[in-house]
Amino acid sequence: MRHSFLTAVKVFSLCLVVWFCVNTSERQFAAQVAKLEPSPKPADAPLAWRPLIGEYVMGDQTLIILESDGKLSALFNRTELAPLQEISKDHFKFSSASARANDALVFARDTRGRVTQVEIGKSVFKRRPLGPEEGSNQLRVQPLRPVPDLIKEARMATPPQETGDFLPTDLVELRKLDPTIKLEIRYATTNNLFGTVFYSEPRAFMQRPAAEALVRVNRKLKTAGYGLLVHDAYRPWYVTKVFWDATPDDKKKFVADPAKGSRHNRGCAVDITLYDLKTGQPVEMVSTYDETTDRAYPDYPGGTSLQRWHRDLLRREMESEGFTVYEAEWWHFDYKDWQKYHIGNVAFDQIGSAAPASAQEPQKIAQI
Image 1: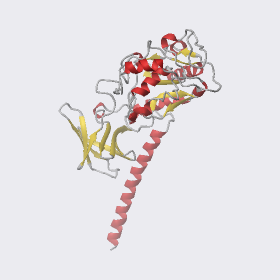
Image 2 (image 1 turned 60 degrees about the horizontal axis):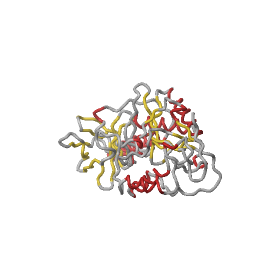
Image 3 (image 1 turned 45 degrees about the vertical axis):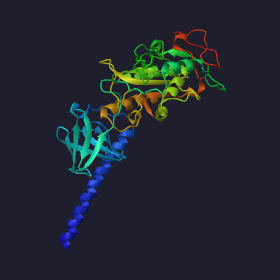
Image 4 (image 1 turned 180 degrees about the vertical axis):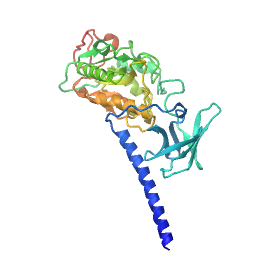
């Protein structure tokens, strides 16, 4: 009797230890994802793990395979984090500290070597496609109607009328304030969400206070070995209308409603990432730019430690100068005074001319 009691106590104690380790690991990971305090730059994940990282689904269950603190881990429904131990290529087991201790996790591939699913016992999680096709850095959305037709209609439309006291428009060109800010203006090319050229010139403008704040961010980042790469800044209203009219309803959370105007239209929003000063190349983030998936959210827990570290570094420095990240896009930042400016609708090739910057006010465009 005493022996059975002691055995039961030992089993209970062991279960308690396992529960504590698992829940501590989950709490630490959740805190790590949520916090933005500076932390040491992590090493990149092993190349062999990169094809495994992603999302897998089985019914209503979602499994995220990610790298954290140098370990490949499985995150079940964003609540249960379970570190993995590698046995061989594509073959792992859950660590002894996990509630799933010693269960096997096996990845399966197709004839081309692409990971298609992961098996945990009898449970099979199918890989969920995320991001652009292999070899591309841009996700594409099939527009609801031909974009050229939508552009013609939007050019003839009128921005919403606004009332109130607004600051005068004072758009300045970012590269003239700081030539070390790099540009990759996707909407001046066909390499964008809709595969259509929207801007006549690859340039970036912002209201002066926002532009000067961005220059300060770029200056700070240089001490860490990074610079800013801009994908988009001021955006004429008619382009926002085209985005809205072209985008399917299930993805409209990623575009602004033209009836309200966007912060891009006001010259106070910027789509931005980091580039490495040594290589001049963009850094790798958790998702690609303009990606309409869950990976685009600034608190998405997947990816690698280094990708999340880059994302958090950008956000931390931008927030230090009065910018706020958009809840569904890690790359989109709004300047604090965006509501003080009118909606603008002047095209890039008209900036600096006598054309009005909006339907309500005269234009004041700085020539620097």
